[in-house]
Image (cartoon, rainbow, N blue to C red; front, side, top):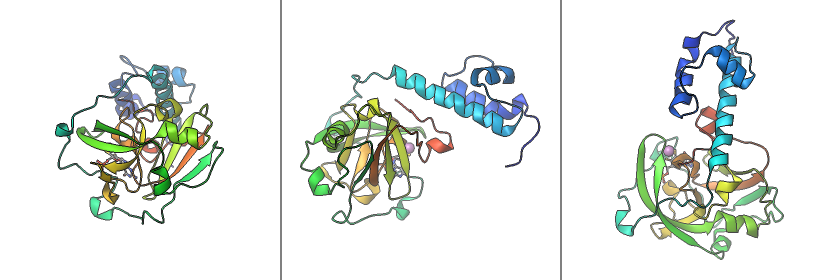
Length: 250
Ligand SMILES: Nc1nc2c(c(=O)[nH]1)N[C@H]1C(S)=C(S)[C@@H](COP(=O)(O)O)O[C@H]1N2
Ligand SMILES: [Mo]
């Protein structure tokens, strides 16, 4: 990375505007103010980067503190379901990857007593919950869908997860990843979905298993899940590591 000796206020104006839009910064914040807030050295580009990331992590902590675990996302009647349902991923639909559901295993890692991998059949023996909720993409569109599957809270309890851990992290076999805070993981509407529109998920909608978390923006609802890890280590995610707000509550 090329290090410029001095960074001007104009250099970071777009980033500051981004933080301001999120209601994180009010009014004009000078470079000096940002340095004070974050304790980062702003004389180089990497210093500014560090400062902006520090602000984003601060924003995550504020959002986590404001999260109300008993507030439910709005639910809808079947008649409100959006058809056709829009596909989205970081690649086009023709590049969707699929696995044989019979061979697929859900790996469980980290602060969990029982790390036995799960099959689809065994996941179906756990209690199932359905929901018709709005999926809101950060790109500015939304749609209503019907999903059902295992409440993540029930799954975590069953696996003997340490529910005091900070994060639940997901990896996907399309090389996507995301992670969420434990409070949101335990929210009653956060489910490991196996069905979409009352049919088993198909690959483009995240088969064999996707996270469905209506209290967060759509990019948090990881499709094509391969593993779940309970951890105290911050792991970010595919979009989060590129600057999307990590908490992303709706
Ligand atoms: N594995 C995986 N999950 C993913 C993504 C992805 O690229 N890969 N994209 C996310 C984004 S940005 C959105 S909006 C939703 C889209 O879900 P849908 O195709 O069911 O509408 O999936 C999310 N989960
Ligand atoms: Mo999205």
